[in-house]
Image (cartoon, rainbow, N blue to C red; front, side, top):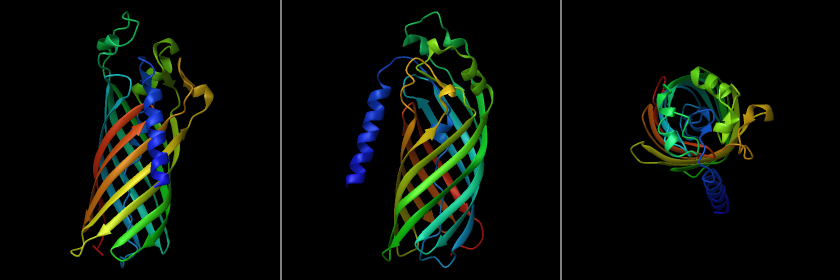
Amino acid sequence: MKKTQCCLLVLIVCIIQSCGTNYPNYVSPLESTAFHYYDIPLQTDSIKTATYISGTISLGSSLESNDFIYSFQANIHRSHNLGMIQTYYGAGITAGSFRFDQFDSYIPYPSTNYHGIPPKFFGAYGINGGINVVFNFGSFEWRAIGIEGAAYNEFGGYLNYRKSAPDSTSSVRETNSFTKSVGGTTDLLWKKRRGTVFGYKMAIGGFFIADKNFNGIENYQRPMYFSNTLHLTKGNITAFWQFNIGSYTSAFQMGINYKLGTKK
């Protein structure tokens, strides 16, 4: 309960701080889309090692503006169930678009016409991984303490735009192409009699950005993220629905993990 209250407090602080300005934020879209759900076999499954492929659709926006971010991600990951320890590691690619929308109706420099800026493509490739300490109670499994991390290299027109935009037109402007992050997780899973597994995962974490790549007129807060995920597994397929809120961006994600090989 104390951990949940702490996470909620951090989330509220992030939202309040982000609402303190009317300037747009030019940050990496990976801060709200890089993390999604990676499946791992249950401790009670006969198969302890599995390979998954996954596809994820992300829809998001900056917290300060009416812009729109959408992307598609494809990943492959390998997972291991080692008794009380579970791990996964993998790699993925991302392709998406950042669309500017009506910034000039909110910010105090009407001479800047964001309506005339075309959508900016962004892409990324990188690696991800995690480790959990897990406790099993029969039909209930608690991946109590987990750590997740990712490192992605971004490219494309939106990154180039962030590098060239002046500081005076943005609250925060990130110019880094390499995004590194780490977070803590907890995951609750219930297995039904017919084999269906329902779960809820919560995560909170942050990003590592050098000072020289973190610019803007209000660049005093490093980005963080808080995510909530519902996931449902039947056979080889795990569907998930995830909502991410960060210091500067938010996103809704939905996708599927498909386990290669046998069902159990």
